[in-house]
Image 1 (tube, helix red, strand yellow):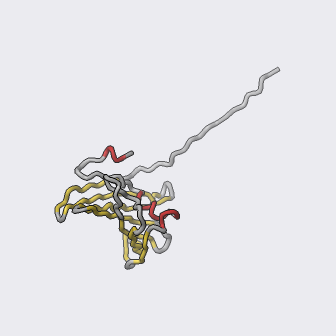
Image 2: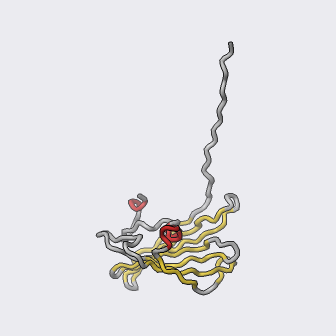
Image 3: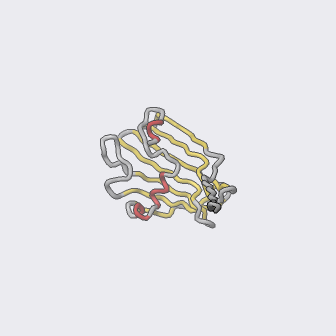
Length: 155
């Protein structure tokens, strides 16, 4: 639904900050090969780099004519808590390649890790077709409160 608001020359529908987390869902994990990359550091935290490549067909992402577009990328995972600090999703079709990188930060008010920045880069060969950046802040918990009073008729 959000794809209708995209700008730029690249048609895309996976530029959603939480898209990469779908890869980790139980029903999708078996579609991918995972391997542990090199340990590292991100935002002062020790992280594992978990790399993935999609192997199953049909793929999660499809091209404009319904063709398979396999994705690959990585997760940076906090070694202490298991929180995901960064995700990347990369795909290429013909001469165009794209990557979406999302950084996460802990929101103390919510007690959750939330996306703080998403960057998109699309290349045709070595030429940059489009770059984009979205920042996220001021997260709020959606709540609904109701109150009910039952009044009994007086006799």
